[in-house]
Structure formats: C-alpha cells, structure tokens
Image (cartoon, rainbow, N blue to C red; front, side, top):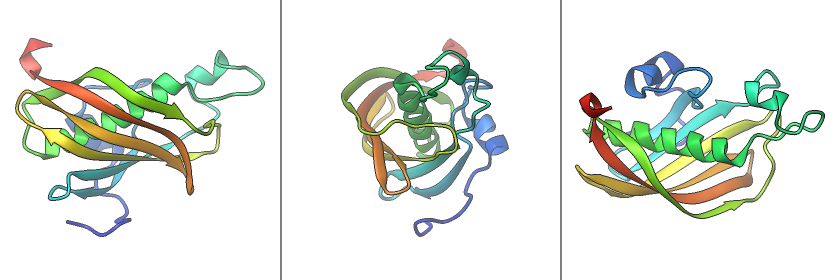
Length: 153
C-alpha cells in the first residue's frame, strides 16, 4: 500500500472512529504505515511529561508503565484488524507471551509501534509486536486477541 515510512495514514481523529478508547487510554496518536497484504502496521505515540501516569509512576524519574506499552501495541494491532475487514468487531486482548522490556520509555520519546499479523480470522488472532524509540527496541511481545461483536460490549 505505502512505503515505509509513509507519513500519516490515520490521524488521531480517524483512530477514534476505529477504536473505542478515549483519553487517557487512547495510546496511539497516529498510524504512519499500513500494508494489508503483508499484515503490517506502524503507529506512533508521542510520550509527553503531561501523561497522567507520570504523576504516580516513579515521580522524579518518570518511566512509562510496561503494561501501557503493551496496551499501545495492542491498540495498533486493533487498527490493523479493523482494516483487514473486521470493522464490526473489536479486538479484545486475550494473552501476552514472550514480553520483554528492553529500554525505559520516558517523556520526550517518540514510540513507533510495530505490529505484524501472524494469524487473523473472524474469531481472533495473534500479532507479533514491538515498540522502538529511534533505533532502540523498547519492548517486544506476542499478543493474542478475540474478536467480539461491538454490540456485545
């Protein structure tokens, strides 16, 4: 579809039309690359000192919580699933495996959220995901999800 990096494919407003998340839990600012044939997507999160979690997560030495890094990756995968034709369903996280946290994410970092669909069907699937800051790996994991009808939530 587009070549890496392609700039802005989906803005925050467009992501809000796809994902049910809202502030403070919408953790993807934009989608900068998507390739449906290769089941690949890259999102971006601009980490600012104004994030509400920094008030309590190591005040004086703020670090983005690992669980929120995983959530940002899951949300990016959710956009991919939606674009694969499952727009009447929502991806609900089932399982996280092989998660490894490699680098702390701090205010001022720009996270690139990479997800590659390993398996996606009408019932659910799995993505291999990683978040990078510049060329450094911050976190990697495999995320499994179920697809549920929007009306069921």
